[in-house]
Amino acid sequence: MTPQKIVPISTHDSYKSVISQANSQDVYINAQAILDTMPVPCCFWNKDAKPLYCNDITVDIFGCDNKQEWVENFYEFSPTYQPDGMKSSDKATLMIQEAYRNGKAFSQWEYRTKNGEKLPTEVHMERIKWNGDFLIISYTRDMRRLRNVEKNLIRMYNIVELTPQFITYLDKNGAIDYVNQEVEYVCGYSRQELEEAGWKLILDQENQQILKQQLDWLKVHNLNRFNLNLTRKDGQKRILGLLIFRIDLASGQSAICLTGRDITEIEKMNNDLSRAHELEVKRGYVTMELLARASDLKDHGTGDHINRTSCYVRVLVEDLLAYPCPGYKLSKRQATDIIESSKLHDIGKIAIPDSILLKPGKLSYDEFEIMKTHTQVAASMLREAAEIIPEDTLLQTAYEIASTHHENWNDPDSGYPGGLKGESIPLSGRIGAIADVFDALCSRRVYKDPWAEEDVLAEIRKLSGTKFDPDLVDIFFEILPHIKQIQALYPEAG
Image 1 (cartoon, rainbow, N blue to C red):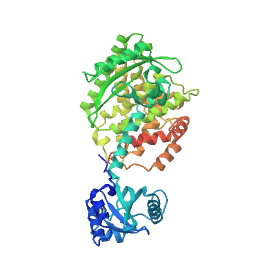
Image 2 (tube, helix red, strand yellow):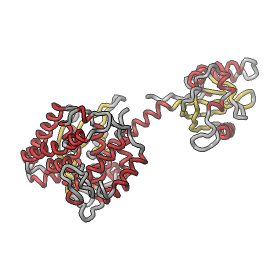
Image 3 (spheres, rainbow, N blue to C red):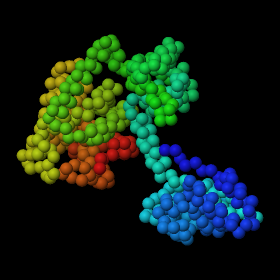
Image 4 (cartoon, helix red, strand yellow):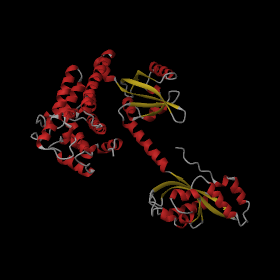
């Protein structure tokens, strides 16, 4: 959206003509006519902060029947207090005084339309000569559409910031314009250091040349995959697997995006690029097979639940990585496996009949016994998959989470399917349990409405030490602000 352009009335030829008739009886009428040609809401004011006249577009935006209604009832179209805490009448007076004193004034202003809708605006005031004295004219910019654009941009920015992918935007010459948090984490430098010093900070001459070749390639192609070797601030050598592509902007210009992940651990584990590629191909094949089987049976459209739950798992695991303690230590590989495999925690529900899974009411004893078998179905499927690729720890972790996320920390009689308790439940399953239950309570289901946030948090506290590992519950509440950010990124549909 292109914002409305405010052009001071004093620059208009028609205004200059009116001023030259300062002693004419028709001056004020002519000035009103000028106001009605302005493309934004405009108004004349006196020294007492009372509006004298508004133009036609003001009437339209506020939903008034006529100009007199807006002029005579101006303060009824403003809340008693503005968002900054000032009383509307006092703020208007201060703006008028500032405009008389300095020639101009500007402020954010919140109005209400006639039907009660909030109307955020920017108000510009200008002092103009008038019959040997001064008059104040205001121009009002409707900010509703711009605010919505800003909200969408902020949300997109937050998604880019929170993604676990390495993301960098470059200008047409390959210079760094922006890096996300993951880039800072991988490189060990702040974004300010990276944006100011550029690639020479982390790439040697050989790898700078590789990047230049990719930028040249992009002049005639759309995208490419390649690897870069970088040096962190602490001297560690890391390997990045990257995708480079060009983004065409609405302005007609273009930007370059560089995205990927740190593949150093994969390289070390396999010690051979071809073997690493083979493992990724096999993993992709097995995942595709699982998804195909799930699609053949049922599609419940639970993408948002899966997205939120896996993100909750991610922030819990990242906290354990950052602040390791006895009994809860994870390698980076284990952490990655838990995060990525948590999406398969409910895959066994593909075998549950719709009459039970989608029942809009409480399940009977027999129905609930059938529902509980989804953990056994998942365990069987993932165990078979893991046997195909025994060296793949991801599938083993997926098996652990899917088969144990309904076990209880200190209430084995109600946990299922194995009646496990305490540390006999894998850490991955204990993490998955908290994420799964929290999102289930917050979400709408065919058999229930979403719980209020305070009730959900109280329930999590209540179940600490019985259903949930109490240490993990403590961590959950420490990272609650991050949990709420994830909820905002993936809101409940409808």
